[in-house]
Length: 227
Image (tube, rainbow, N blue to C red; front, top):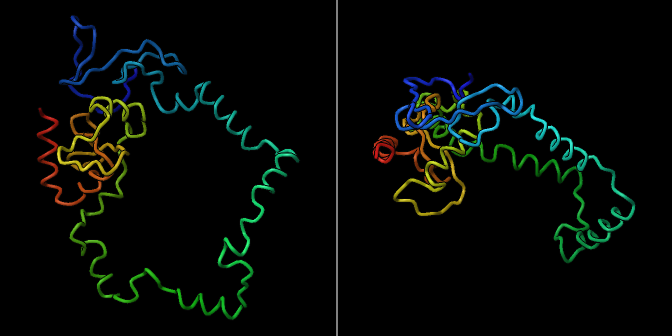
């Protein structure tokens, strides 16, 4: 029997509820994967595929990919081309484009190229740029941002289950509601620790704030998850 993510420990089965548990986390027994037909455990009670590979190889996914490819590769009719041409007429005229009719000489292009060289690369304060690079930056964490995530992080159904658990809203009690986009945050900042108790739903803004004063945010989110 397959399990939908790696590293499960202390997994227990309840004869009373007929479900699997790990602490307070519930796992549902899915009789068969729609692709490979093997049974598996999933935190999503409506889970259909045991792995991302099975999802990618599913008939529905292949069918949709075929439809999308057909739409993208479908040749345009002459009538369609004419309508596009009509719609674009006048979009480059002088009253809409300040650069309309302007052509740069090779000399002007070269001068502009030389003028822009080094922009945004710290050429005005090279010493400061070098000082703030890598371990010199106060936010340097030893390069952990380059480390790979755990395997389950590739499973979108797993991440959806975390959002569902958190009622699909940011769990930061001090959230300013500046963003509608939701992210899954690793409370202890260990990208390889994808245990449900180490994951919490945050909006894009709060997730970005969590990169600063990490000790404070970690304590706060640990308290929230332990409630």
